[in-house]
Amino acid sequence: MTSSYPSLTRADVGLDTMASPGLTRLFATTASEATDPAHPAHAYFRRRFDLMRTNNARAVRASRDAGLVRADVDPDALGRALVACADGLTAQWLMDPTFDLVEHVREHFDLLMRSVVTDGGGLTPP
Image 1 (cartoon, one colour):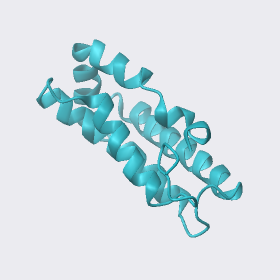
Image 2 (tube, one colour):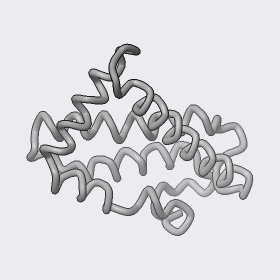
Image 3 (cartoon, helix red, strand yellow):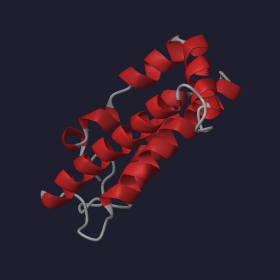
Image 4 (tube, helix red, strand yellow):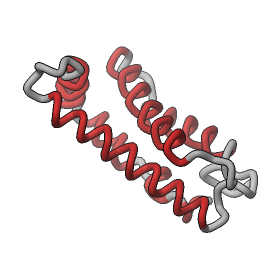
């Protein structure tokens, strides 16, 4: 499955996140504060999360249509789960910088993918 999910196997985003803890903390803090509809960044973060969920769902749907993901998988639900996983693990890393963000994101995405792919593999073939 590695070639089928290149964006899930790349560590670039996680490494960039870990290289800029101050910026990541500012982003996470602002995202949390922007849950208030009156916050000036509310619309931005709402669009960001909508776009992330939509793009993830589109990728899952394409993989499902190609027979790589089980037919009964809800692309929207998995798209939300991938966003929640990445953002939640980033919050854990912000609490404890010794937490290996890249490794934990990869492990969790692999676990999610093993539950939905047709060949039983995760991010890598079984």
